[in-house]
Amino acid sequence: MNEAELTGRARSHLSGVADLECLLHSQVVTPFLNLRRAAAADGIDLLPQSAFRDFVRQLDIWNGKFRGERPLYDAAGAELDVRALSPTARIDAILLWSALPGASRHHWGTDLDLVDGNALAPGSRAKLTREEFASGGPFVHLVRWLDVHAPRFGFFRPFQGMRSGVQPEPWHFSFAPIAEKARRDLSTAVLRAGLTDAALEGKELVLARLDELHARYVAAIDWP
View 1: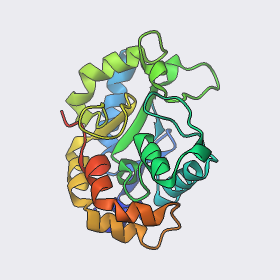
View 2: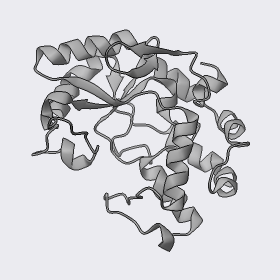
View 3: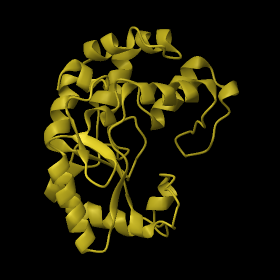
């Protein structure tokens, strides 16, 4: 991937996924559909609630959280009062659950947030909370199935609460053969260049800490 593709500013690496209204890296479509077919054979309707997300969308998420227009949560999932947080504390809180624009793995088209459509009530949408994927939640069967089968198709969970500063996301899966190269290629310099002209809330503080933030939230993942 080139720098524009790595930072979510281009779509030249993507292909549409038939009937699912989402975009994935062109080399991820077939592995994902194979995983989806295997899930269907076991009664799971494997759906990507989120796949490719561009820079503009990630910027909107970031700025909304920084300004308090979107909810902000601590590591335990409790909602925070943004007004009580310093700008630095806001940045740290955002990064527990959301990536910097330009640094989201969803930019690459390799990563998906997965749910089981058969476990959803008609017309409803998952909230992507830990409770939904824990014992007693609607997606516990999905979690157990993916634990066993996702690696066979090249997918893994990059955020499991071990190495990465991102909180555990049992719904988030990444296609390793493509994503690992993208992770290595997304250097601090590439990310800095992508943020320089962005209307990013807290930008001066982010750029001053970028080496630290890149190491903690981009380079560090929970590799199998």
